[in-house]
Amino acid sequence: MVRAGRSTYSSVAITLHWVIGLLIIANIALVLAGGPMTWHKSIGITVLVLSLLRWAWRLGHRPPPLPASVRSWEKGLAHALHWTFYLLIVLIPLSGWAMSSGSPKVRPLQWFGLFDIPFLPVERGGALYAASHEFHEIMGLAMIGLIALHIAGALKHQLIDGDATMHRILPIVSPPKG
Ligand code: HEM
Image 1 (cartoon, protein in one colour):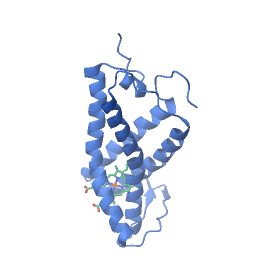
Image 2 (cartoon, protein in one colour):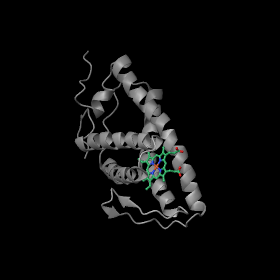
Image 3 (tube, protein in one colour):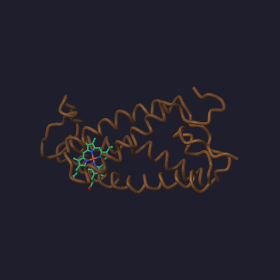
Image 4 (cartoon, protein in one colour):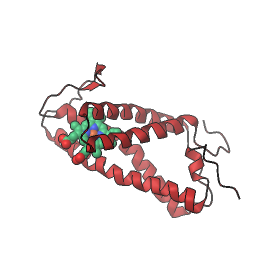
């Protein structure tokens, strides 16, 4: 549960934030570089599982408040972006899974070659397949812009505003003094 006065996210939330974030960036880079699709799918399914854990953790653990100096429009933008991420980190891999399940070309789906991942009940070549394909490509690429905005915001708080925003999610970065 929430501990009064805490200034950072919980260690579970911090770990999931960095692991999910780095896996998503790696997975986008991998697919754009034309790397092996079996890896793209396996990393993506891993992100899906970790993101569902993140959702479950978020239900019982509220983030620490933003520093009081953060302006209200910035709070609004940050919250809108965070909730968009909560949605997309589940919906992007889920749409990839649905797309692979409903692809007219049947390809085996495995997790790093270790075990089979079941296909979702999506009609091959049907409307749900087409919609998931569109969603996955558009939102997968949109994620690049959203991540860039998120990182730009974090750096602005650290380097320009000099507030304690970054410390909440990366406690080794000390909150600025004074
Ligand atoms: C972290 C989660 C994921 C992200 C951020 C992501 C992102 C992307 C991006 C950016 C593309 C390229 C779109 C384009 O160039 O037009 C792509 C393509 C693709 N993804 Fe994912 N993906 C994720 C998870 C998955 C999963 C779980 C699967 C399947 C199990 C999957 C299957 C595919 C396939 C098959 C394509 C190629 C689509 C095509 O051109 O036909 N992805 N993904």
